[in-house]
Length: 89
Image (cartoon, rainbow, N blue to C red; front, side, top):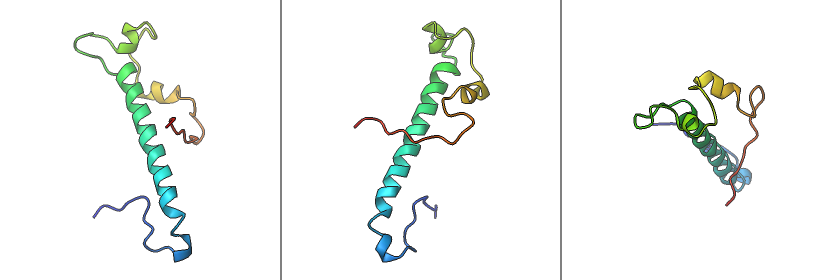
């Protein structure tokens, strides 16, 4: 069985009201970070068959296909732990 990141079965009963909220915030932040990484990869690193270039090159944002290392180095939080960003509801 896969272990979940937010497993609160062994916590004391006094903390059970707080833990589910922490799990939702953590999962939301991780999902948003994964979405942003995929979006950047899709637009800057992935060459599309129909365009024969990346969408960012087609739009004139960049002049070359980015490597994944270059994408990660250019992120706003590179070198420090990421601050969670929650999209507007």
